[in-house]
Amino acid sequence: MGRLGRLIVTSIAIVTVLVGAGARVAAADDEYGSAPVVTVRMVDNSFAPQTVVVDPGTYVRWVNSGRNKHNVVVDVKSSAWTSSKTVKPGHDYDHQFNEPGVYGYSCSFHGAPHTQMYGTVIVRNADGSVPAAVTEQAPKRRTGGAHTIRVPKDEKAIQTAVDKAAPGDLVLISPGVYHEAVTVTTPDLVLRGLATA
Ligand SMILES: [Cu+2]
View (cartoon, rainbow, N blue to C red):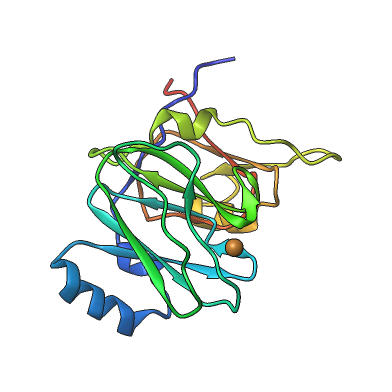
């Protein structure tokens, strides 16, 4: 088997992932200057979207739009990120991600790392590539066989492929430059770049 190729996902209309959040985005722009803000909703009981892919400098804002208390507890403590306090309904918690990497988290009331109410923030490298750890994660596969969706052979856009994929599926991305910001809501999805020939 070839080595995993580098997944290039460049630029970035971050705005396109902020569907339905126009008013809040405007307020956030005032609050943080020109820094982009991506919203993750905390519902009862999951994070939506479960995975966000952002660029360094982006603020991720967790908004509790459920009825339960939730929180954001980091899988691994680091100088780059520490856990939130309890976030009550109607409240939010913001964190700015400056270091590329893969940041796992969960709600300690309703989940645990990679279990039930959990999520991932993927911070791209400055050149738009996704940190290698993303493509090397080995989530548990569903029984009955995972499907493979090839980009651009089966689906032209990564986002379309991701949207159509079921948990456990593999999205195989050919080398190239994809001008889109990708939001992943399907759990246990594997994104993999094909090696450059
Ligand atoms: Cu929760």
